[in-house]
Length: 467
Image 1 (cartoon, helix red, strand yellow):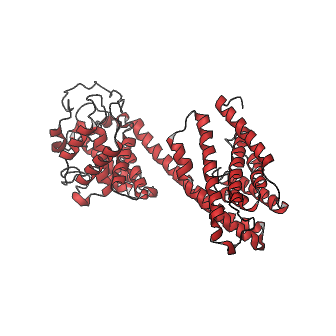
Image 2 (cartoon, rainbow, N blue to C red):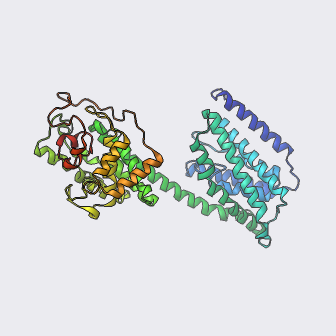
Image 3 (spheres, rainbow, N blue to C red):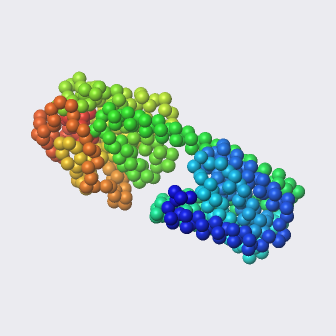
């Protein structure tokens, strides 16, 4: 408690005091001991199992337990409905939640359930709901569910706000938008549980409903863990590239961000956008197969070194061949140096022959390179970079992708005026502006004629003919 900021200590004191008062003042008349005991046991058992097996995802009042909380509102008077959740929250173990955190969480839940239960009672909701009362009897449960969603969300938001000193917009989205479907969708699940409870099933009704939900959440957690493993794999590969070639540090993430902007503007499905993000992050992973001597060479590359550099898309595609979760991303990695006029590499594809992901990444790659500061020239502004991309549309870049990026930038913007790449000095003699083989300025005439267009921060510009 002493480690909490003063505002958090005040908040905990207020909500705990308020919850104790609510438990004392709320009506308890009419509570059936068997229902009260059964719900309390279910809350403890399913809460413990959910936290142990689902990594805390289903901690009250979220996840598997939210329908059970709603069912308590429908089956018990306000006082018992609020009290039944307390043991499950306080007893549950968590690696991150301290006893003070659990106490505050229990108090939040008591107050939210108390409000929802009172709403249900004021609307004359039945303690013995049956199928015969439907659909006319849907209004009280729906109103109670909305009240539970709003009040619990409000307390969650306030708790984060007092802990962090401010309420961030993403917290509001997480609490009131992303969880809305599940929290509000728990109301009909709870109503089904309550109706089955009355059909001589008793506590077995809750088990029948909660077990499938537990399996569904377990599958969701496995999917989330698998996706986290994918993200870790991608981050490791990117980190390896950035360690080997310091000039690409941050470049992959920004190319990925620009690619996602283009993909969403084109109306791609979210699963394709996710693969496109991977393609943007990993588009330069083949540089791991390029010798460090070539990557850091300060002067112009000779023909053999050019060929080695131009192999990096093929190398990159081969490196990720076994990562099946990448999907279309592999084609984007392999062909992101193709040109619309067929003068690109490695396959010399032209126009629509070039995979869509590759055409997106080519534009995002060039845009980031032009808007990033290098050791030998300053960054261009977004408007100047877009003008250059438009000038090269149809020959080097797909005009559709260029315009999609322009529209996305008009809507979302792009950070300017910052040194995005703090590039290390290359080994050997430092670069000097105007040194042979290194452009002293990024003139637009070089971009389309030589296929440079600032794509690939150092090596491509060194080659003069694209890398």
